[in-house]
Length: 72
Image 1 (tube, rainbow, N blue to C red):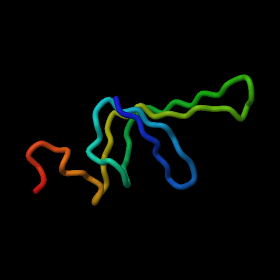
Image 2 (image 1 turned 180 degrees about the vertical axis):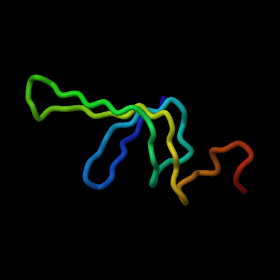
Image 3 (image 1 turned 45 degrees about the horizontal axis):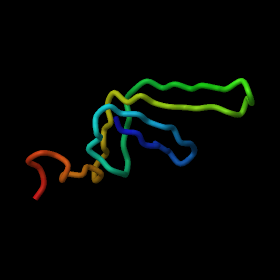
């Protein structure tokens, strides 16, 4: 299981993936199930998470060293 935070510059959401993404950092697209939970204690308290089914690394962010048979 892998976890990371995904941000678009205006907000951040926590992501859980069950397979290691090819990219270690940089731009990515995540396909999955989004869940938002609000606590009753304070209306401002919430937790937002995506369970990733697929993490797509955008150009120039793939770490080829992590792939079998790839890289120099």
